[in-house]
Length: 308
Image (cartoon, rainbow, N blue to C red; front, side, top):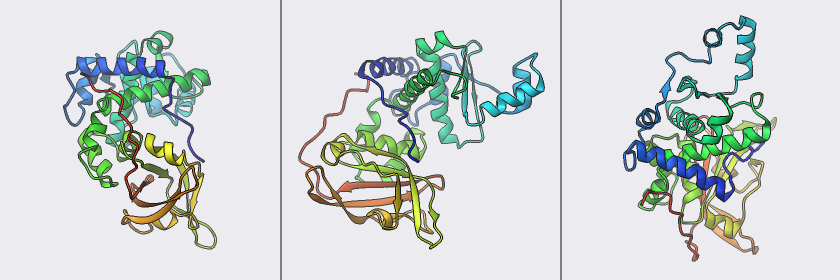
């Protein structure tokens, strides 16, 4: 099942988040520094990474002095799907160090967002990215705001999009830029599709599975599209990619990457377009980049996210 929207904000909300993110980059003098110096940004925000993980039940018990061990175990269960916690009063960020290092960078900046956004800091002492801790509506808004803060800081406003202009439209580009900015390939591919000046889409799929007849399928986790792609083709709504789907033959079976393959996409007017699709298996997700062979005539101007 596709994941729910984790980033859309109203224009006024987005401007406020980006203003806070811009201040963080300014304070750390991090513009144009690659990979984005997460440690320096945290230091400039007077934040530290907790030396002991709050995700170990024993550490939870120590952290919540006076609580019974049973309560600590219960809390561990409640945050079993949590990867980061920001303790505002102690200026500490707790990160699950079992996740990949590139993902930790985004998590640290996400938790920094909770600390740097005034509304978040005023309402809660400890932010736990978990439905059991916050009202669902408030939690959803705060998580989307923190995600946008992390995204803006990590990719330095429109710095990522500007750099992508100098590279070929292919899946190897967001893979390279991930290393440049210190992000995961997953986050880089999402940013690539969302900010590209040409029409393109990135399908983020769950790992391959096979039915009883041996036919492969991959559940859709997310689909990110560029403004120009959505204008011409709309937002794809598939929930699963099977061997019968036009992208089915692009799925990597027994290999990490597939060669660029010709596929056909139909636009909003019912006109078919020759497109190229290529895929990369991260072992956690399958990323499929799709784009028309011919560049579209209409261009989209990027918003000014970089400091001027």
